[in-house]
Image (tube, helix red, strand yellow):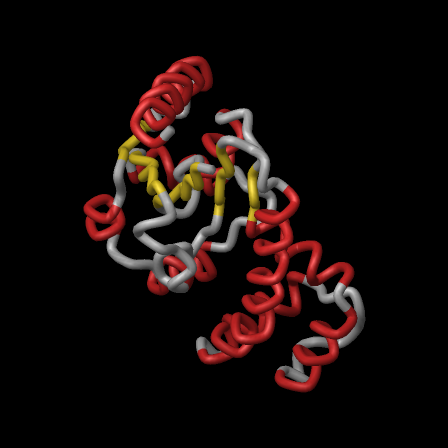
Length: 194
């Protein structure tokens, strides 16, 4: 089984690229969203740690944003509660898809949270221009520049991510170009790691 981790800047198109491989995708953002909606135990822990912000179940993203903007240490508290749950779900995902040839991991802070293992994961860096990324981010429904800045500060420098990656894929935000690039990259990875 080949495990591919997609890394890059916030808004660089990692999720879109992950889906283009046509393989099972572990989407950490989606997992986190489900944890907030469905995991009562997680809610209780968050409410205990952040009683001034977390009011009722399911956990509201608005409340989490307020907590993070209020104090950057609150983000660590949230991560310490949510990340173990994401890890559990990731193990289940791998087990469930153990017969698949390729698994894709779309995890925003993959390198930063020490989730990745160099020997077991092929890293693909999504390379996109900053101005294209920012234009795309501004179109997002819940766009909040302060939150984006805080999240970027948590990330390793993009150059470091690029150096740690096995492959680089250019994203010019043109779907047809990107689909072709992913197809070529998938073939290349299969040839090398199969």
